[in-house]
Length: 358
Image (cartoon, rainbow, N blue to C red):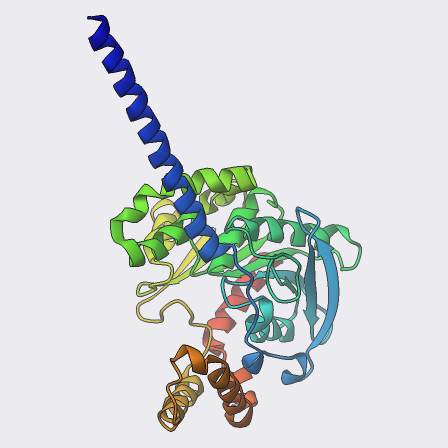
């Protein structure tokens, strides 16, 4: 009997050690995959960058403010004309660099009576940070940006509104938990909780195996970000009286609607402070009229066929990067590229702000 008991004890220890090793391995793999996807540094692609001079009458003042770990973030206040009615704080999306690709949005809001304060999030463009760190960092940076606007003494005391796309949409909704004074919010193609984007991207790569990683993702973010990690868009809505516009397209493959729009619609479809704008076939990015952009891309594809080398080959990467940049510099019509917003969509955005900011 003692021998059997001893064997059982040894078996239990072996199984326990194996279980610990499996969990540790899964944890390590999850953190590695997470960091490879989200803890990267992102820079705007220089040949397609927008500049203040691209927009007639637009003015910009540059600022610098600290985020949670003391990292300095680059801030930008855009304005045009006088008699502004409020300040729109804008949060950019993930993976394409900082705020630069949204400068045409800032220009539109500035030309229609609003100051626009935006910034490069941690690990993006002109801001400090070796990498973003993780998705909750977006809520943190926006929290600090709003506080800077309200408390630095650099800006007029006007009502605050938010505008966010994708990662910025998630951040703008979640930050309402910490800033219930916000009057209005427009969230485009956003998601409810930080693990949603990891799940959406992971399912494309490993299918349902991603669900084995999600508990470790949540634990990793909790360790890194504390309460910010578990804070969701729904949490923000529940702690705020802000008017909310939710915009999403049903064919969005980057952030499927089940992670954002459908969750919000189910809970708030009958709430008068919410407005839902669904699209059928506009994908993840729908701010621009794509007529010129599609034409330019078609011409670019034709140019690719004229190259006398394999531009996908590793040994030709640097050569192709230089040739591609030169092609864009020589052929891009900057006026058309910079002034291609969907004006009807943005007119609706401004009407929404006007209705709820005053």
